[in-house]
Length: 153
Image 1 (cartoon, rainbow, N blue to C red):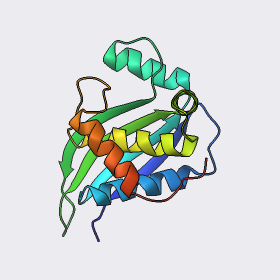
Image 2: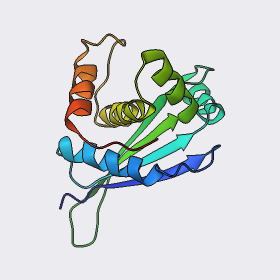
Image 3: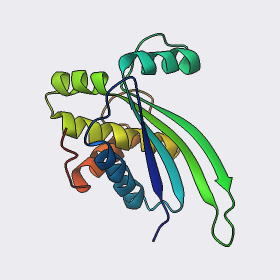
């Protein structure tokens, strides 16, 4: 067992019936990336919540689709290995829906893409722009192809 945990929370929206499946998908991403003893928080929210976070932490006063807040702290556990508190992935559900329509993909695929994207940022990856030849975005799409399972939005 790899000891990974993903917790989810809801802000500004009704709790989607698939929230636990989204957290389970995030666990699959951590497994595929061979992470051990990671804790990740996944927050599903509205545009207002993510806009406030984007404004306060990135000084961009507009909503976005996904934000990652890396904590990167190791916490010792009695009699066990350290737990790595990786950080938080925040996803705007309205932005996810706009992306899916714009890029002509299912909302389910877009949610999986955003979860992967956020976790890759927590893992220390970044990208200069949104061109598909960026190494992080290439890995994102590879993971999307190889990790099965619909979340069922």
